[in-house]
Image (cartoon, one colour):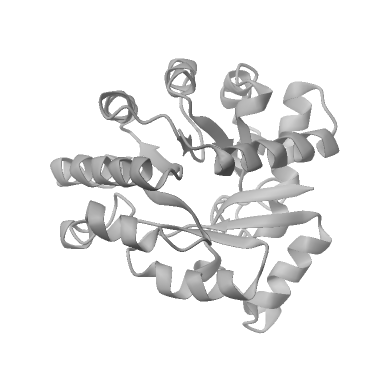
Length: 258
């Protein structure tokens, strides 16, 4: 019923499962999660994520470099290399890429160049780009527009309504994480009401940002239904309806060849 559109399966705290990722995925499936997109933050993550995806029919992964990585790591993500890695059928997306000025304003030029390369590779392979933005909303939107990126996800959305409208106009999907369930996130829930139901996705971003009532604990894919529950309250839908429509949206995202 549910798709976790953004989880870091290689970073999960598997202590409760005696180190066995298979058990963590089994619990998520028991909670109704039927697809998982494992997200790369380092260009070499494709090695372990590829192995995980090869062992699980319901797991796909992305290839790319997070904007908080060092320039020498970002530099490895050439268009040619990203395209090469993305040929694997279990690669569902490029990224996570984007801009993050909260953690570093030292490498803005490098971040922008790396982001642009991910977008170019995304267009070539016709797979969506997964975008991270923090304290960089204007530059993020400007780059999406200037690079004519029309096939992507703004993940873990925490921005304002203008940002939402801008990326939606570009053709993007918007994904909400456990933050949408936080008591102090009313402003974000107000923005969420304006996101069309056919552009909505859910994620855990696990092991980070566990939803209520698990806030402050290590997150994992089995908690994505709680994100759906928070959005169900926003939209006046049932949690099952949110699960079904976000799953359908994810399928449309992967099928698109913009």
